[in-house]
Image (cartoon, rainbow, N blue to C red; front, side, top):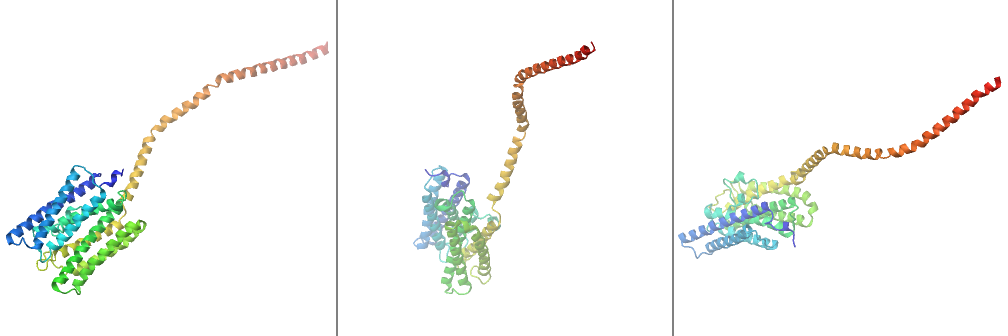
Length: 376
């Protein structure tokens, strides 16, 4: 039998996060294929391959999410490797779905209902705590990133990271989100290069930023897997590099002359590149903070143990005065028992003393009589 902690559904906090991300993905899937069907009907373009793909992605994703949510609510466990496969299937499905449906020639090139339902989800994934800062204007990938959160929680526990290593699980989540957004950024930049037939200067740099960041994140994942002892030291250097790298990428790519200078992306369908650039930057920034900030699991556990030890001492200290009288009583009881023996042993000593005293008196009397005889 496998330990219960191997299952994602055993811990309430994990179950809530997985269920929340799947529920958001399920809702986004319904909105996406409903919007695609409405667009297909109003434009009479249902025969178009990209419109058909948009509908198919939403239907398949909603079906998978519905089945998995049913298992979670009924507390039915599935094999962790199967869970990994389901998570990766959703990620790959929405990766291709977002790539083809939100591109310039796709059904959702601008920020409408279809775009947001296909590309928004980051703030619902509990993946990045900084989402409230950008939730007003930056919703990248509801369905796609909801699947990423599901995968980021299923992969570490399902493959190699133990649930007893919270720091490794956190690093895996940050790296997985950064790697996925890097791939999105690279794909969108490559699409821009192809559409304008120009992959030099800023357009080429946009492709390089996403490709190099993805390679670095995957390399750090390999370090976590094969050299966990050196992962913390390497993570500091890698997180600093990613912050500097994405800061340069965001500064160049989202500038006035950059390929992702607007979040609307109506002209070239570059909204994905704009959002993925800033998501990757804030992800790397938060990951850097986590590496240089003391581990809360290691820091907070010590004072709690110390306080617990003090509490035990305080609980034990009132019992000490009660134990001391008991010890005194135990010491007094043996001392009271030998008294009869001492009385019996002292009696012969008293008789011998009286006998010696009598002998001394007799000798004294005899000495006193001798002068009297001499006088006579």
